[in-house]
Length: 497
Image (cartoon, rainbow, N blue to C red; front, top):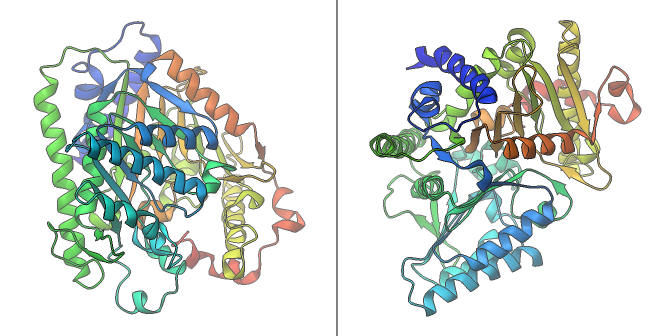
């Protein structure tokens, strides 16, 4: 199967060139699902959609209002995957909207309505008496059987680590990091969490897919699949194993847990792709946009996103432009080496300046996290300079007064084209944590819809408008001083950032 990787990327780029030139839409049986994207279709389902059904949300408030309105109005289902839920009034209003939808379904006798919420166990438990968990237990009490809340706990946090690592630090071992916000047959893919700063002045990406039932069914099933090996929250704020699961994440054998979880995820993906293969031959609908969910769950042997990204970078020809954004710049060595030493593409990377890093000004050791990212960025800049690649690799720092930066994603431009034909969006930061520790989900969106391409391009332009290109002087400024202990500890710290 892996021998088909190079063929896949060659075909993908061939499809992209053809798509730019083509005026007609493409039948799903033609190139994208069966030929042009053969390799990725072996690992991920392919969903054909209409590009006009996709909408880019631009601001945190627009993201918040979209969730608030659509959760309240949902009549079929609400499915959420996030790192955590905040505990302020804005978050309470979201919960109130979910409660309203549940009450309406209950009073109307709608027994099919369901709410599934997946959060990270450790991040969702932070705060004790007031936490993500306590925000949601009233729903579990009032709507038993209708609402399910699951808390993923990494199997790597067990034994002495579980016993002695304090709150916050225990989250560095690994978390549930997927971000999916689904209501009925529409969803928002984002990198944002459900917390007040993500609704006000923390910039992220938010892409809404409207009336995409098959795609929503997939993500609903994915959340439910991960929930089976997560702990179930009860109305009294305790937790228990899912009824279909037997191995405890931190009290059971962690090797057995990983193996069983990996089989569960792989079985789900295979069931979806097999079902699609059966149904696709019967379809006659034409689409102009295709979506490929890419999972990264290295603990469980799932590396779809990593394989896709590496081959996308490696296969990029001279003249390709790739704009990449990440709020936490800590590329894996493989990604870094491919970008600098192997790829022929032009790369523009947009990272956080220290002042817009979410940990800027934090107390204690957390306050040195921006220093670690500064050191990593400086090292990357000097690596590019050492290999004389400044002509095709440019590093920009995002700065916006009184804002923080959490954007992640990728925009892919073919040679001599001003609009992207491919974009990646979701939860991954392309860093060590994303690749090796956390549970992540992105999508690769391939489109020839000019309206959607224009939206994606303008989104990228808006982000980079707040970016300033780095140079030698950038890392010599007084506020870029990195303590010696951070420099010495960076090889270790990079494994957890």
